[in-house]
Image (tube, rainbow, N blue to C red; front, top):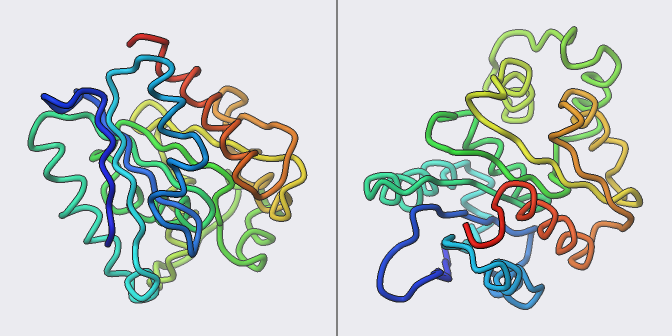
Length: 214
């Protein structure tokens, strides 16, 4: 998988790192072009960004989850770095799948317009509400496994920041997850499933979780 590291300081790693996974068919440089790195620099944050773009073949066979954990997360944690995992659209789905496997590995999740599975699973969860929904036996279905994880997640153990665009074409599915989270965990802005909207959501995420100069 291609990665691009954007460090806060050239001489040492920051004590915090966010691994960002993009939407499908996007490269790590898309985060730079969309102003994600500039937003961190403008706030003078002691925060490194690791921008990664998994190969779709590895997403399909699910080996991407082990790749992220062993190649990106474990080395950072071994250095004592607190790791947030973030993702946009398909990247958000991958971030959730990683967190479902090893939730204690992460300081938090930043999910911007995440893909949440087919309408079949989101309709099922939405009909009952996540608290009342019964996931059934673990059949290895990644979508169902993610929703099972969300149902049993402890907010104190793993914070989630969910950023949404009101006009996003997947807004109905996003609302199913938003309804299961606290109001403080959900940020909604005007906009669709596009980089300008995701950039606004990213700036709001930084302001909410990383005070200027921290």
